[in-house]
Image (cartoon, rainbow, N blue to C red; front, top):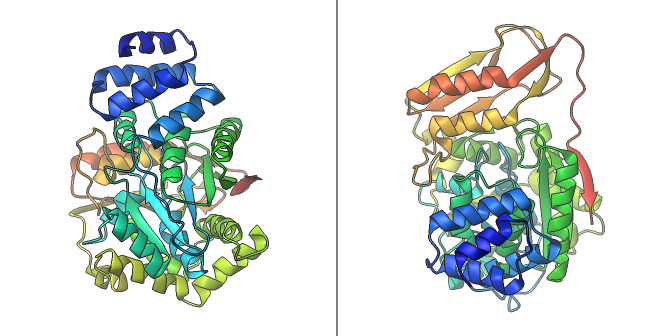
Length: 434
Ligand code: URA
């Protein structure tokens, strides 16, 4: 076998065999296939797709590029959540402590930002001192001690995804159902989970813009999870505007802390409670998703989720003093306000453009080697359906890089559409799939 012939085969829309897929993934993970050849393969997969069997083989090959963690020695259910990616999507930071506080173990291995979307690891990196690079013993000990861990893929866990993820991010090959399925499911299967809740985003800020594509992705993810005998619930949620109001790594930590302290952020908490509720249900601590939602709300109300968050941050070497006093964090050098150009009801937000604006301010990567500025980001005030007055502040931009401001401002101004007629608010939870 050689990479050129296999790339050609996929380019010609032929099916790759299990052995051929294993050959490609193993050799890329070992550094024997260079980035330029693997980029061509990714684009061929992106354009021609993969069958159910090819997707399962891809997931398995990626999974077997590293170790598979066994958590059988830890009592109780282990349940995780994974999102297909969005703008302002900080639900992981809020729901992991909620679910752990409710008595379900959460072994969470997260990824970095991808394309215009943010990543949980980049958000955790914004907390001074926080270590996501835990080894296997620490990973298990953290779950035993506080019922959760927020970890990165170490070089032993799905190394193939780590490499492929970074390459896809900069080769315009992210929005592919088989590649997203392989990426998410290999990481989740390696974690040692019993159950998984999938947050499949749809809308202008998601990789799957159309509901039908989100449903196809959900089906692909759920089928793959079942192949590996995992309990799974897929929830399709709205990504036509930022979730919550803060976008950017430190800003999203701030909003998560406020949510954990009980601030009502309606869209963010509706989605977070639903996902947490499904996890609590899968973990056997509620008899339905709705009952799980009530448990989730209770964990916020009684302060146990916030305490759990502080506990895990402390155990993972993060500085909790900045979480207790958010004003202690350093400030961006520049900030700029954007005001509404006209009065009317907010009709549409091109959320991809909002995500790209955050990247240009320094909150994400435009190339593989870019360094993220944790303070950079956007406070984005309005929600679709809101009545806006001309001159009202729509967004505030934060950055240390003055050059990014004009472009970000331009993108956001163009991303908003107004109507003189009343506009209905989008439905946040679009479907629940089993
Ligand atoms: N999240 C992942 O972990 N991988 C993807 O490919 C997309 C979202």
